Amino acid sequence: MGRHFGDLAKIRHVITYSISPFEQRAFPNYFSKGIPNVWRRFKSSVFKVAPPMILMYLTYTWGNHVHEQGKRKNPADYEKDQ
Amino acid sequence: SGVWNFGSLLGLCLITQILTGVFLGMDYTSDISTGFSSVTHIWRDVNYGWLIRNLHGNGASFFFICIYMDIGRGLYYGSYLYKETWNIGVVLLLLVMMTAFVGYVVPWGQMSFWGGTVITNLLSGVPYMGDTLVQWIWGGFSVDNGTLTRFFGFHFLLAFVIGGGTVVHLLFLHETGSNNPGGVNSDGDKISFHPYFSYKDLLGFVIMLLGLTSLGVFSPNLVGDPENFTPGNPLVTPPHIQPEWYFLFGYGILRSIPNKVGGVLGLVFSILVLMVVAILHTSKQRGLTFRPVTQFLFWTLVGDMIILTWIGGMPVEHPYIIIGQIGSVLYFGLFLVLVPLGGWVEN
Image (cartoon, rainbow over all chains, first blue to last red; front, side, top):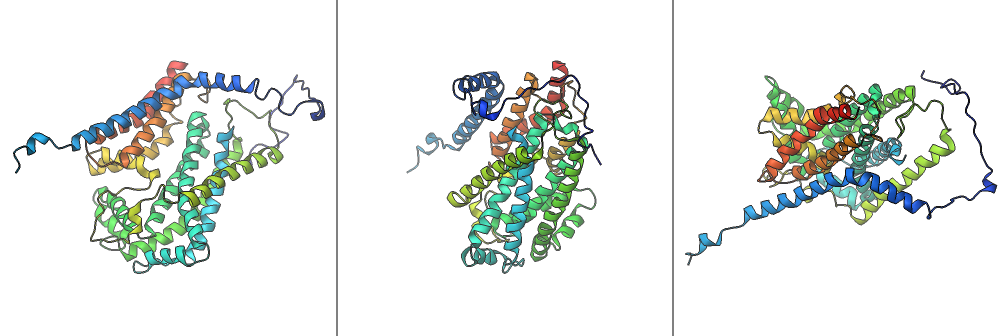
């Protein structure tokens, strides 16, 4: 049932190269390239993620504000109370 | 990527819930005169009963976090194009929701009783036989002992039905293999499960269990309702009846439609709409990785669901009513109109 290993795909003309783990650094350029890369990834997605989240937050604060205003009592209604 | 961990995490959630649930079931009694106090007994007297109950209750929240993330991954990367796997996944979501609903009635607190009353009453919207159906489910003329005993039984049974559904879900997934963030065929680029995915999944397990135990011991009542510390009382209605957080978005949609049958249909279709996503896929690309317009719409959907969750927990007053109505229209509009349009535009 389903696909089997050895029969998934035929790939031709692909050459792979590898180097021994003892001949290389484990985490090369982790900070020197990593941090600029995080910034690049942030820039490429911030204008797609942030606007809906900002709109959501504004709706939340506006909604709560309007609701609180609606619960206030008008002092003018109670001026003549003794 | 990391978002592919949620499948195995759901398996872990199910095992955790079943294990903790079986142990809770050893000391729980499903009768209205002893149900609430048996939970108190578990908490206070049973060895580590408080921890088992903690893990089971908060484990349900993590179950829903994982399932919503799994669905989100599926929507973002176009995994729904594996139609059989996806549709069984929707069935699993419905089963998990049903299990969580009947499970919440089991402790027989105020919110257990009244939440159970509100939602079971929705069945009366079914034409012609609605009232009969509700009384059949209740096992009487209101939520009472008959309801509790059978709901406990359903809760126990459904957990294993979910297990069976999970097997079928995986069976279909293994026909095709997993999707990937590029949305491309990966038949020619496989790596062995061990050690790559065994360790990846194990890391996911550790992080989730850390989250679950942290929530359980530092802030166990963070997502719970204080009403459920009061025994269920049919003569006293809580001022704000609301379900647990994972149902609030549907509750928001239900209450936005000022018609009982309409609201029920809105609630039902808010889940069933997932089944038409594959049919409405218009893009030539599978996932959203290279589709900026639809990516924006995806995050709009996420924001909308958070708004609907917030609204579901608010009283039905201005301006929450109109926000909920706009949010509900946007929810269905995104699935049925905007996202298919986005895919067509991007083509």
